[in-house]
Image (tube, rainbow, N blue to C red; front, side, top):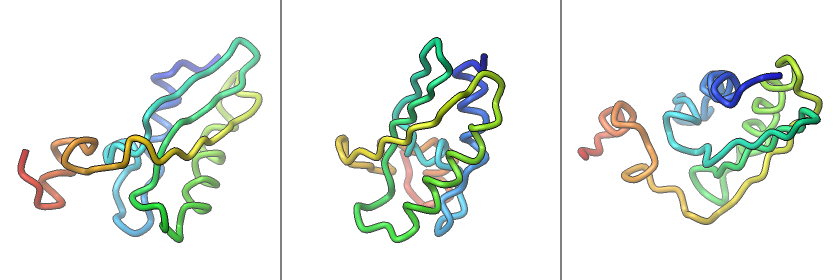
Length: 102
């Protein structure tokens, strides 16, 4: 069965198509849960509620996770609380790339 670390490593390969930065580095992934049956639930947000590329990101999350050992299903739960704020959620490297100083 895949570990949470392995799941997060795979999620780090998914990029926001507009920003060309990893969804994990952007801080868009709020959490990952996996049960004993191999059902994985990713709780995440998008950079904005009107993000036109949300379906593409959703598809990529499913694509990179579904072939991990022990993963039977992937559910992507898009949430809007807390609202994504790069000053809070993004990694320091991304903050530097976006011109946000911690």
